[in-house]
Amino acid sequence: MATDTSTHDAAPLISPPRLRTDEDRTASRLELFLDLAYVLVVAQLATALAEDLTWHGAGVFAGLFTVTWWSWVTITLYANRFDTNDVVYRIVKLAGMFGVAVMAAGATEAVGAQSGVFTLGYLATRVMLLVLYARAWRHVTEARGTVAVYLGSTGAGAALWTVSLAVPAPARYWLWAAGILLEAAGPLVATRYGRDVPLHVEHLPERFALFVILVLGESVTSVVKGMYETDWRTSSVVVAAVGFVIAAALWWSYFDLGGAAGKQHLLAGDGAEQRSGTADRYVYGHLPLTLGLAAVGVGIEQYVVHPVGELTTGGRWALCAGTALFLAGTAVLIAGTSGSWRAAWPWPTAAIPVVVAVGVFDEVVPFVTVSAIGVALLLVVLAGIREQRRGRIETTET
Figure 1 (cartoon, one colour):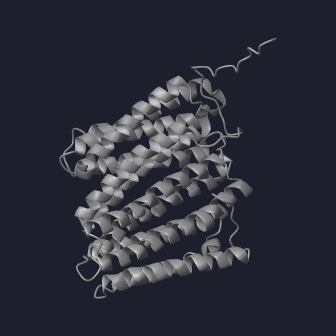
Figure 2 (figure 1 turned 90 degrees about the vertical axis):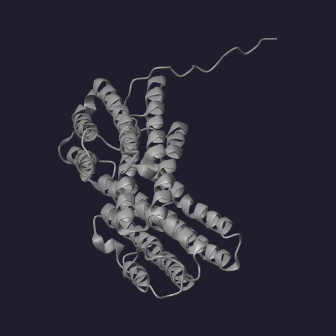
């Protein structure tokens, strides 16, 4: 009796980078593994904000979150085009992931005693990216124009961060900001002057949706921590339930409405073409959106822990301003990918001043404020569903 000894050919251990934007693929397990490290950084930044609910603390949180988000974005953009998942790619990326872990370890004191640690962690992710782009420049000749832009912007930003190690505060942080701005200009310059190297329009929204859901998970974590910290006090449990409703409404608003509309515009339009700029607007629109989600998580915990009067102004604004940022980011996402600001009116733009107004009333009992935000977000979801059913918001599942 004959035995079938045939086997599948093993994937090569070393596979040079190539454009993979025409292939049917999804997020890799390595990408998901890396996301976990970035969520640790976000969690540490949220912890630091909860301990310093002042304008200074909010500014530090926003700045460091932007650095963290941008580090994740640049690695995602490389993987979107050139990820071959071979041994070299894995080793380099795992080394960069350790750099993200270093960032997480120094995040709570990134503008204090651990500033150098945070800097070195971020620089490790830049070295990783430079190595990967240098490899792509060598092997993907048709993309050299675009790759060169990314090499230049990443290298210039990394140089400023390196110099910052020898510069005292606050000049150090100005160098950080300048470095991020230089890097952030890279995709925009590549869009205008680089060769038209397409993006994978199915992979891009999947990656951003995964990051959004991980950041949104911090809100659920806040509900759990708040109930535990207050020893299941009735008022806190009630506020925790409202906080969960808020998290659920934000999830619904993004995954069924705003984020789904952005993806639909990418798929239906010219989002894959680099020179259209649609993908750039999709990417940058997620900064206020995810920053807002991270702040909402902090705000929910503050409300659960302080449900009947002890809430600080910073705790109130973490929730209210965070929600407003989320809605503003959603509006930018929809308008940017559709090419018209009118696409984001009245949904969700009209809800932004309402949410901000709730934050202004500082004499209101915290339970009333958080309930008002919860009701406002439920109305936002209902209004979005109505606009979707009327055909004014075209969506596809994210």
